[in-house]
Image 1: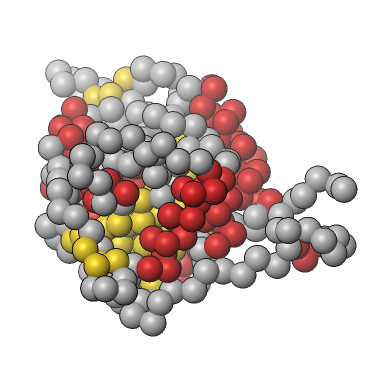
Image 2 (image 1 turned 135 degrees about the vertical axis):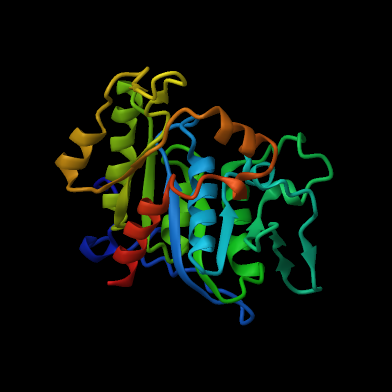
Length: 275
């Protein structure tokens, strides 16, 4: 059998188990207009903080916003928002936890008695949990949902791409050459799955000198322009290495972040999805 491209429209196989996979349906109590995946080729690039920041920005712009934390084995969204409550149930559906500013959040860490307890599950079980977050939670009148994906191109990203109605993805990278190379794996997976790439965000792009205000590129200039030009992507933004931002995230106060950091990035995403 030829290598699967995940594009069923071009496939002649009649016995492929991946053929014509239907999207998972929301329950009758839910409505979600736009679903955006936040992805990276590897861990440690700041994908979760970018997810949190984009969600905060869309909420500030007046949109009902939600986060589905699909990083089951490494969840960090609840910590960024200072959430300690447990996901509740109405007997039929899961009820997302609301942040201080009203962002709906579902994460495995909001279902554990101890947030440090590891989730030691195999891939199919993890993928099934992500589907349940989508189908069994009450996502009430959500304008923008951000899906914080685990790194790589494994079971969960594949499940999200195939099962959820993803409108597009934002790819997070850092300036190091190794990370830039791995970013292309995420780009090519998105192309294979016919998922639009909304743009790139470079994290840890620079540090600002506290004395003169000069931007210092500790990791060099990176390859984000090269990748953007090669594939025709927009560069949505560059985030600095910022101790204040890290402190806000660590203390659960990400909703107090500087309004200027990703405002242009969200505006670009907003325009693309309104076309």
